[in-house]
Image 1 (tube, one colour):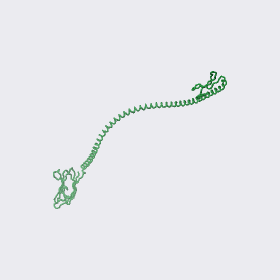
Image 2 (cartoon, rainbow, N blue to C red; image 1 turned 135 degrees about the vertical axis):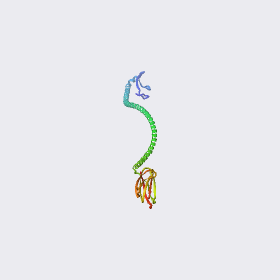
Image 3 (cartoon, one colour; image 1 turned 60 degrees about the vertical axis):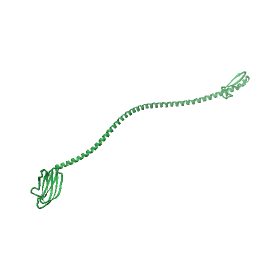
Image 4 (cartoon, rainbow, N blue to C red; image 1 turned 120 degrees about the vertical axis):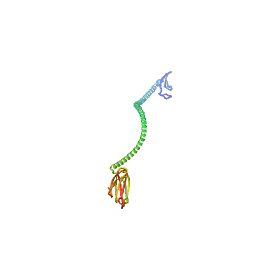
Length: 288
């Protein structure tokens, strides 16, 4: 039953006071509120109405209780599913946390390995830097020596070029000397000492002088308009003519003869004719 004042649910009670039957509403907020009161005579008359009102109140309580139970059940089912859902989420998060923990352990192990490798590489780098410094010093020293050697090589290259030039010059000189020696040994070298045309008076003569460096031969070719004679002398024979062409007492107007010579050579050409002058064309070749 609802309270007559506040309208909230209240408890209905009946009791007898001074021969009067009272019906009161007991509200948690408003307290006891008298609904109605009857005498003993009226008590019996109103008993049926009171029973009906009480029955209605009990039915209302039952309905309220059923509704409360229904609401409680639905709420309980709702919270149950929520709890199940939360538990599922918690289980999933637990698995996720375990996976993350496993990953963390793996990453931590990898970190430890990387740290160890880093220290190893750092030590290796330090060692290599020491080697690099040593090699740099060695390179600088070698580079300095290389520069010195390069300078020496340049000087030696120039000297080599000069020596090679001198070598080729000496080879040419040697070849020339060898040719000259071969020519001298074989008397195959020929040098023209004179080619001339001269006029000689009757019983006249001319003398040609030739300085000979090496012992050899004179080859004399001549032609004359009259008979003539040749005498050959040398400083070795102290002004004495040691050869005559042609042989005594002959004369010749043309011819050719070869005579050995040494040092200074005197070539005498005489015209024995006492009446006629002559014109002589001659050549003197020196072979040595």
